[in-house]
Length: 138
Length: 137
Image 1 (cartoon, rainbow over the protein chains, first blue to last red):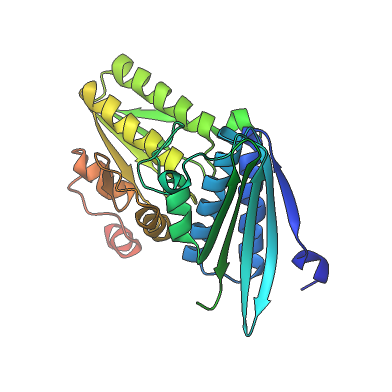
Image 2: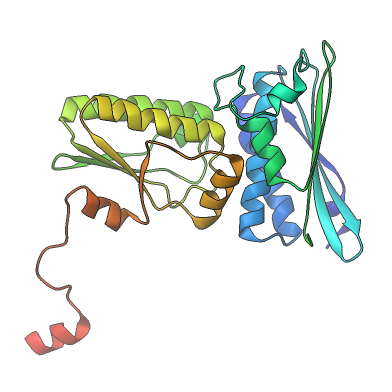
């Protein structure tokens, strides 16, 4: 694999069309890393939820895709950052059924369940950053 | 394929049943547009059943899941039964982990079983095989 294919990639998430582009980029990265089909679907679905959150609630943002290595395994880290209003009630936002948008309220908590590692940093008024990792060997 | 083309999937009518199939990518606008178009067609055509084949759909996130649930509810209000057929195993696993139970959405393993559930069955004539064709000659 060429090193360049392993470098971080960034996708803008400013329009609805960007959501599809972001999903494609994440799918391609999961395939390059050799994730199983179920893992590919988990990761792309999580990316879709996080990117939509940034688009709908954060007024747009950026999705960063990074390849991680540890021991014999590799991981894919998604970082979705927006400059929106932030999340006032983070515990609430991670609870199923909580929604301020048009979804089912499973987006953030659901994405957390689909990934191995999950962190949310949010400052009211300064935006939200979500990082999520899934490993090939766990 | 541009965004506006993605949602334009053909809706076929077979008797009192509408049949449609989603493509691999479904964006938010297309999901909502399909729900609107299908409900309009149910009323226009007096459809009693709707089969939606999703065997090519690779990702169903919470937004698309909600669109499918709403579509099923709207169709029921119009007197039609919706069957979502052909969900891939990886999508099923992911939906469960995401915490979505698709309550109210009737599903079938594949389009054929979905059509059978809607009252369509194969004709009583056995499928033609090469051997049968040979004998008939």
